[in-house]
Image (cartoon, rainbow, N blue to C red; front, side):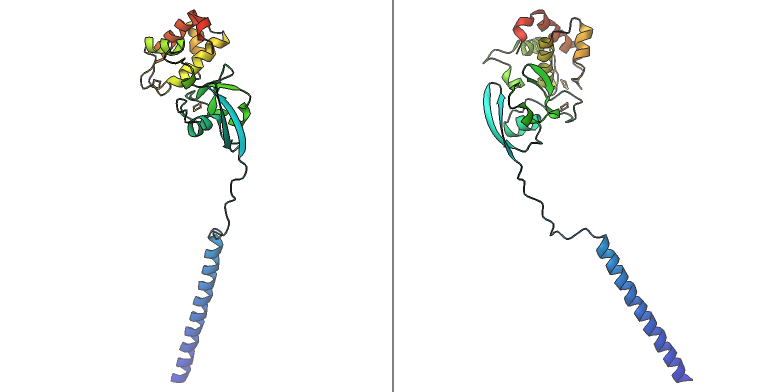
Length: 206
Ligand code: FES
Ligand code: FES
């Protein structure tokens, strides 16, 4: 009787042990499947760098960049022209506005490689030596800025607006400058500056 009991007890222990081993095996397999692949997958080396020539503020620059590099990043990160600001990087604030062949463009929304035949003007290229561009001088005269973060984009955009020749009233200035956001709310002074320059339009073209 006692021997039978021992055998039964031994059998129970053996089954429990087998079950535990099986469960552990299942658990290990499931864990292995849920883990990402081992780091043997290598990131491919960047190989699609291309030669790009950009003419900025009258100076030609030869760059080696990927085709996906925006004009804003090329200006700021490669040419050290940090006047153009990266506010939103999504075409919503206008802080990155530059002039391409005299037309205002959000440089965060266009690729540098698309402008190899263009004349690009940034805020750094508007003044002639010590002489401020008329739009820069008007912004100073009218206090058209507070923190100054949006100002390079505002000024380039305002120069583009004058080149377009469409704004005839303060309302039209406000409407045509609406792509340039000023978080400091310097709008009345900005409109006053643009209005002044529109009066002397010939001097303001780029
Ligand atoms: S950074 Fe280009 S529109 Fe805001
Ligand atoms: S002056 Fe500060 S955001 Fe326009």
